[in-house]
Amino acid sequence: MSAFFSNARHAQTSIISVFNFSRKTDAYRHYHPQFIIEEQRHIAGASGDFTALLNDIVTAIKTISNAVNKGALIGVMGALDTENVQGETQKKLDVITNEIMIRHNEWAGHLSGMASEEMDDVYSIPSPNPLGKYLLVFDPLDGSSNVDLNISVGTIFSILRSPVPSRAASKEDFFQPGTKQVCAGYALYGSSTMLVLTTGHGVNGFTLDRDIGEFVLTHPNMKIPVDTREFAINASNQRFWEPPVQRYVAECQAGSTGPRGRDFNMRWVASMVAEVHRILTRGGIFMYPRDTKDLSKPGRLRLMYEANPMSFIVEQAGGLSTTGYERILDIVPQDLHQRVPVILGSKNEVEVVLGYHKK
Ligand code: AFP
Image (cartoon, rainbow, N blue to C red; front, top):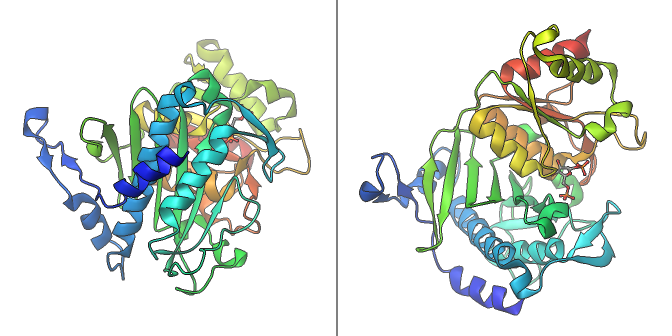
């Protein structure tokens, strides 16, 4: 752990530099530090704080990527005997990655508070660090049940404005609908490390070039194909699904012999970041719908640090995201760890499922 943080402190002085890939060939990659600054110009009232905050988040992501990548070599695999607020057993990396996000983002004066899957309450910025005008919400290691298996995991984050800048954030300050997000993003620690971002002006994807330690713009203006033949759902929950989802999945399974008249493929990674990334890359629909498995939980996924940032990205890439009954980005949160049903992905396919819910 201490090695991460000393590296991290060193890296805090670096800036995000992005290479413009628009000339199609590596030989013409241009150093392009303007990208994030240009994004900042789209945000009303931004002063440079946003750019600096994003730089700190990106440095944390590089540090997490390093830890995930080294894995067993540095003894970070396996579970602890602690549980998070959701009652889930924590992996060592859940705790380490949460700590990395905190350490990189608590000192620079851009935030008035943070919230995470791994912390029961709001994380208050410790004195004497200055307080800032943004709030950061994150899932430091999404899909961590996959981490010991060397299957893709990720970090998801969402940036909101603090209702009262420079005052220690209360829990209620975070209860803003997803439409209020200033920026949302995820990092995918897969065969390469990628960062996918939106500030409400489209979606861009960057790949970590480990030789230079920077993210390079490799997937400009990502768009989700409107049609798909691929669906993702945890089918072990089938007996608990509501009729609209039962109908939709049964029709996909019936394939070319059923009412849809075409064959579908099914995928389930159990890592939302990986599922959303697949959908951004080649289309698809992802569902963790409302079910009757545990009536105290209206869904599996968490609104503030899973559903909201992913819905912002999906909508900005031309897709749709809904609970089946309402647009996810319109929900006003009532709890930091609130759960919601999620149905997101290719526009035409999500509309089919929505139509079944209306009926
Ligand atoms: P963690 O972040 O606690 O690992 O949860 C992952 C997740 O929220 C999401 O990424 C997956 O889609 C979903 O859980 C997997 O759920 P199942 O265990 O039902 O497959």
